[in-house]
Image: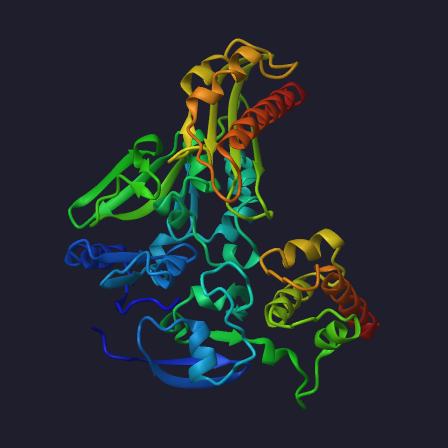
Length: 292
Length: 162
């Protein structure tokens, strides 16, 4: 339970961090809040030659908003996002998800960028980011690119980030005035704050009482957080006033591929996914009716 | 490999200066370099909360920080909760009086989490207390007496202010 030896570099700018990454030849790893990386180092699941600490990079902290998006810089602490008025009013789905993220001590250190960078299949922040059609901003010494969350997560703890790239920000589409948007986040976990056994994030748009756009992401039920296009299509045109139609709920089981472990069996996860999806979508629809 | 890095850390108000190798955690620094063995090493991978300390004002897990990251920062450990003469502080006394300890291994982390809670909420609800110690695992008590101890400490601290 002690990390293997590594070199340590404290970066003070994005340019400095990306140049360390470039020099690292794939053997360097970025340390943000350390709530995932430090355990991985201690268990020697990660044995980098160089740890690049980005906690000294001021330009990686903060939450900004534009007309149609909220930009959360990578090193923004989870506790900051949880209490952010911008997040609460403009990205309510992430605000709701933040209540399930970690514990007091871990949220004080853990970062938004770190959670997305690792993309644990049962983590709440990447799940909300996927439901929102967010984009991840990556930078290396040559420039930057933005990758849709759906393309960013490619497997369990595997992402489209190249070894020389630094995740600098997450771009989340924001609530737009005049559009009825309703969101809901539900989760089953062993302890509140633990990784999800199953979590569901729902982000729905309504025209009057009718659902016109649906995004529902499932966590803890596959190698990555997943969206099920057929299920989402099944919600469009419905009022969802009496819950989600069975025909749509029946599509969930084939759209996910849960495993069995010490926390829950695959069958249990399938049943919880169905129940939570119904609950989250129904709750969002009720919110939309109440708020319209 | 990087040679040892020179750091200075304020621990309970006293500055400790030493050199550390990069892979040393703040937890090991506190225990083996600073001699502050009140902070306990439990799981050492960010699950159990036994190693909780106050880092620059916020409770964190010292196993999930590198010692080098504490350079120039202030840390408060469980030792910082006692009175100046070394006798138990109000919170520690309440843990004793409410029989909140069995084996005691988790208690430094519980005390630090409870201290952080009471510092910002003088009259916490049951839910507030459960939330505050949600990241601390105790395998003996069943938590009931720990919660009662925090309620008792909150009451005594409020009384003291009257």
